[in-house]
Length: 279
Image (cartoon, rainbow, N blue to C red; front, side):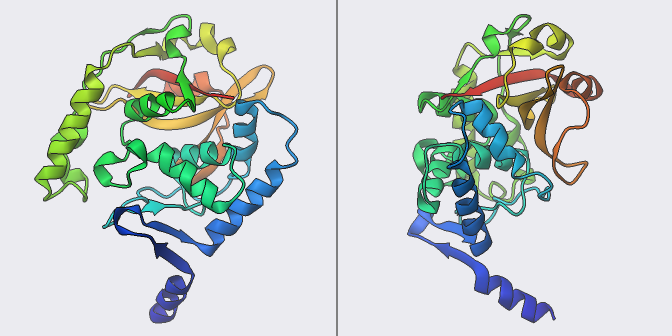
């Protein structure tokens, strides 16, 4: 039975390309992409945030699976069947761009996920601070956290990946990659202007958050910036929550309680970043 299943998986899994620019996906992934793009043709709104929320709803109940991007060699992975918090946000944001085909989508995803679109592990935008900066430069998103009432400066001291290479299979035994990650961390740390909204100030800033804003949950863990991502969603005019790939629920969900209540329960979360998609 294991042999038959392995053969079937190979039959429907595709990986092609040249060198580091290869692409990995299944037929189910390409079909889902086309279905979403077809449904978006009938969407009435032109607002980027509303579009994100509509796309995110199409992912509800899809399984949470971590580390779907990892593998040697590095490839551009398209996986709509299994998502973590970051791949959900990237998938939704890429689908929300003006794309009309699966090929368009993969190019949008490549630009979102990799520095200058270069598909290499060390050029993947692992840190959300770096992801936010690079995609801001490309005109796709804007960090609006400094504009929120109650926000405070947030000097960065990223170091986790280079100081814990044993936790990352692609870094373990590759000192040249670790050195490159140190360069990336130093470059991000040198940037100024980062701020965060302390979770205790959530109440006064909530009204400035819009549907489709990307929420980064800023951590107290040394060497990291963000440990979770979600998509802001006003479930009712009075209740702000978010859509995310939940590790505890093991699937993509609309969080059952409010964003403010969720933040209060997260001991290692100090507050949020708010990243707004551009129209």
